[in-house]
Amino acid sequence: MNTSRTERGVTYGILGLFALIALTPVAGILSTALAGQDSLDTGFALPDGLNWGNFADAWTRGHFGTYLFSSVLVAVAVVAATTVLATLAAYAFGTMRFPGSNWLFYLFVLGLTLPQEAVIVPLYFDLRHWGLTNTYWGLILPQTAQSLAFGVFWMRTYFRNTPRSLLEAARIDGATHWSTLTRILVPMGRPAFSTLTVIVFMWTWNEFLMALVMVSDEAHRTVPLGLAFFQGQHASDTALLAAAATLIALPVVLVYLVLQRRFIQGMLTGSAKE
Image 1 (tube, rainbow, N blue to C red):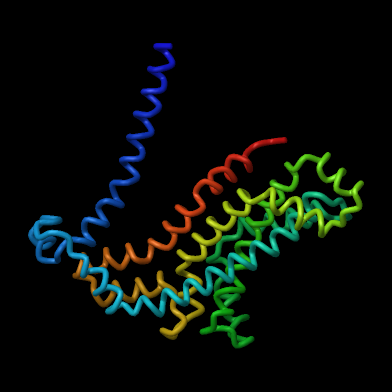
Image 2: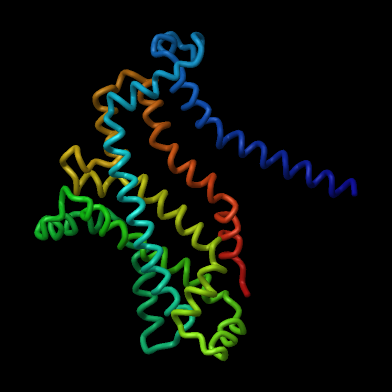
């Protein structure tokens, strides 16, 4: 019992230490965002109380309302398209056997190894040829294609770990592939879908290079790109920059907090074997 308590104490101590290390930069950003610029120039963080007006100033000066709309539109579209397409493809790879299925799956997985920098230039010329630059489609379509590689890989793992007896029972009862997918596997796979949603949303929300190359007008800028321009205009105003960075990170934090239980459950389920 004493050994167990000691091990438990050491475990919690290590976890607490790493949590402190992870949260220290977050606390630094928040304290800077709530500080006055004059206090930061003198080397103190919060001598004059909490300056909540920094967030309102950053929101107004940086036009983050427009950028936020663009990011939400692109992120929701990419997450929805990736989830639907990856689920359909992964169901086929995970439950069916057809000629070339393994090679085709490896072709999808190959997309995980391709760096974005290697394809961004030819992709730009292709989209410009079709008139898709400076449009939301120029951001949604490439990011959906990028996310599909991971989406297919992740969902295929879930479908392959589904008990074969469950699928056989559904077939014996006369269920079609579509019925098996929509009525049995999708409701059961909410943790896996939640994990996929959080990861793809985070990737899409934080995407900078794609937006930088494909978008040149302010109307279609996303929040990471807007923050870069905002930083160039207010490089000396540290408190305002910290407030803007906090506003941009907040949606990702909220999405994770809402789905954290299913996200963790999906990560644990995805790493388990039947």
